[in-house]
Image 1 (cartoon, rainbow, N blue to C red):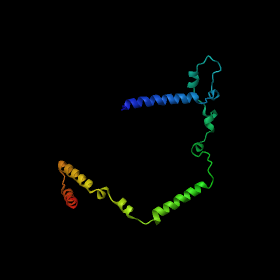
Image 2: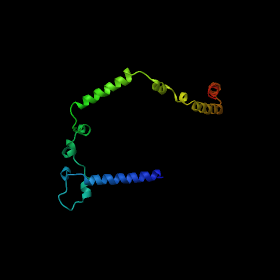
Image 3: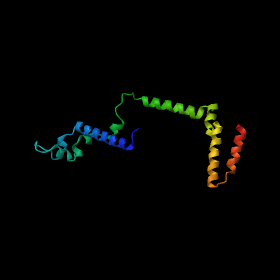
Image 4: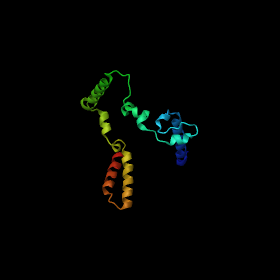
Length: 151
């Protein structure tokens, strides 16, 4: 497979390529720079190294609200209908519905559903307790009870 260094190297390369492409394709107005070069003798690198004045750029006109709450073609009452539908569903599901056998199954622990799993977990707990010198008599009693019940 791919190593972590390989992934990091190629992701960084991809990010640099994408950001450079985006920067080249973006509409950077030279009038936004304070001392824009008027002659061809100045290099573009010097020109691009200068900061853009925010108050005169197009970014000054952008509002964060527009990014999150864009224009929508939905009717004005759609939001109210969706909220009412979800509210009715939640009331039914959480308040008015009677419990059934599936709810009882969901309330059980994994060890109640699969007894051999609890037996294996107890064996591991007993071994680790014996290795650390802890008292495992309670765990041993529970293991014996489960072992008698299901074998």
